[in-house]
Image 1 (cartoon, rainbow, N blue to C red):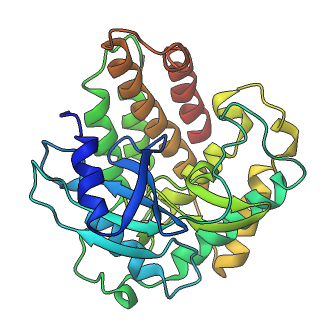
Image 2: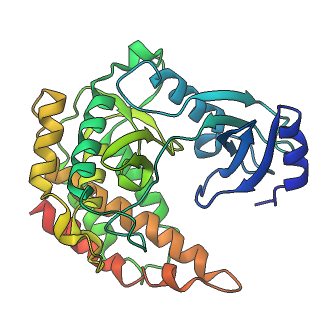
Length: 320
């Protein structure tokens, strides 16, 4: 990936009245910056330079879904401006408000900024996810969007697994085949965030103030989101020692909070949790692969390598 010219970006944003531009951590498929608009802090998302802004790099597509959800019950930042640039040399970008609070994954991230609000933050996230899935895509002007079903998800992550050292992910093809054999009938498609978990929401105390990181949103079976959320809320998934293991509500309780807020039955969630473990094995195997190619690999990323077989075993266990 080409390096972003930060001075050129600052000059570009200065013309829009933004100053004090500096990077924020995170954002693997787009670059994220904090800036100031007068006294107001804002966030700037920039597509990676040197690439066509398509797929997960299409930051303007991210801005469109955020704008579309602004009038719904889903808390999202306010999109303040966008700039199409001249890709690939001058990448597109958009500017959005900075929501109050912080993002934190209690079962994964280091540090301990949370206290007693952990259980309610998880429950509120389940309610927000249900609010997202209650929205009809047609009401957002998305009726023409392609629909990605569960089978497409299996194929997508299988393609990723084919690119990594098979020693990292032993038996992944067996898990793929088991998922294909047992795939449930699809539900009516909704807006799927694609990476909905506590680390991708902003929260102030227990209140969810914004859902962020819309890089891979799509239309599809909403249970894809639910399975991913539940797996990331399950201490058995990554088995990391954190102060919050005993504070997380049981997965079954979170599923009930979601279905009650949705107002409809949601069958076969265990299968979608298995799919989520398969997806996690795929995404983390890619991260480990790329980390090993660094001149100075990051220890915390390499530490995920031994977890990958467990994720596949967990998927098999969930499939029964």
